[in-house]
Image (cartoon, rainbow, N blue to C red; front, side, top):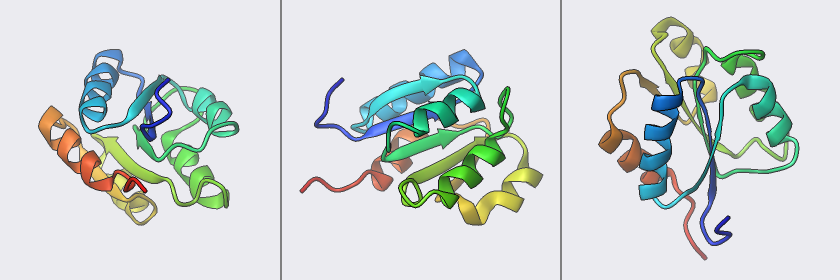
Length: 124
């Protein structure tokens, strides 16, 4: 793992989409870790504080909305930048105030790369 790059977690159960998101965030300057379900995301968030989370709302075991609420409730995690990536516009509109950005699927590689680069923490 490259410790000079900020960590981004991608929480997406569609493996092909997760890999595409991962490539986009790597090109935006992040170290990427892909997680395929909500419970694993919560377990990982218990031990790391990523700079960014790209979060699908419809994931197995623990819903993405619950993962997002957990991030915002925990003081250690509250400043994480969260991009919600979903095809569910109704749920996205209900959770929009908790996310830094909501993107409706389909999401283009260039779109995600450029937007996540803008949200990347500044180097000291």
